[in-house]
Amino acid sequence: MALCEDLPLAIHSFTQHFRYFFSRLNPRPTFEQVASREYNTIKGLIESRNGLAAELSPACFLQGSYRQQTAIYTINDIDIVVLCALWQPGAAGGRGRTYERDEIFDIIAAPLLNDGRYRQKVRYGPDSMCIKVELGIKVEILPVVYKSGNYDPQVEPFRLYRPEHQQWEDGYARYHQAHLSQKNTPLRTGGNFIPAIKVLKHLRSRCALDAVSFHIECLLHSLPDGLFTGQPADYIPAILGCIASIPAATWYMAGCQTPCGERNIFTPSEWAFEHWTQFHNIVKLWGEAAQLANQAFDEALAIKAWQTILGSDFFPTRVS
Image (cartoon, rainbow, N blue to C red; front, side):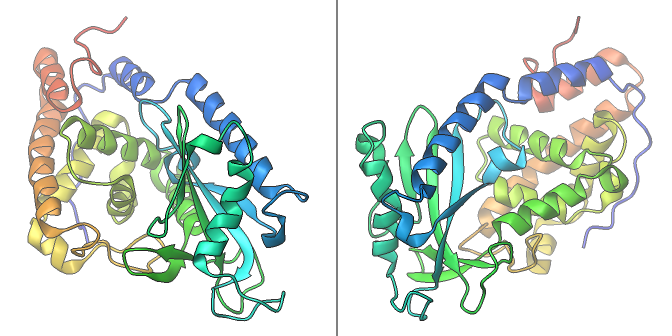
């Protein structure tokens, strides 16, 4: 939907400043190491051929910010999808029996409940969407099954249980990741799409806005590739200006599809209009400040404008 005008190149690119900004924004390697260790340990327990979940032939893969490399500051959660060799409960499978939702959750949780490192930290119930493991880093394990008639683990959608609807629905974790990776390629956005997601998540967090990471990813994915080219001093005001140039109500009425195109996120149950409007109103303020930073001849004024948006702790006046 977005048809946005190109902005002139920034008068001051602030290459060193933005290098410092992203060094503060990106999680340190130690967070990556902890996340990788916990994931591999839990994956090993669940996938063990001789383990307590072996009857479901589970296969684990990652989704979410850690997998998509869009995490900011820290890696404080790991989202694990566990694909079970079952069709949706109620559809006959190859084993000649079906497993209901509660039984699937119990079987996937069993290896963790049997391990002293995790036994007291596992949390889930009849209305849970996932199995939570409360470590120093939060782990959320999402059991999913094949869609009826599919036998290929690489083919999506899979089926996940949504307790708020009390039914199994389609999920596209790997396809979603593939769409983000494709948009981030040099030929499309110069590798700036993933950094742009991080920037908008940073702005969201600074203002404590009600906008989840998935919705930010969907919104930015809907924007023209050309907006993401150039330096951060160029693409940040271009993106913010594009979003702000279209009224919030017009955006909402037109809808915003997920990258996989399976649903519109502008609905009361996903991104409610009042929360979207609040987000959009603040984007307009960010956009005005970013365009001032983009076109200010005075370097000190441009720095102050960037600090208004990004924070002086992330964008200091002087960078060594």
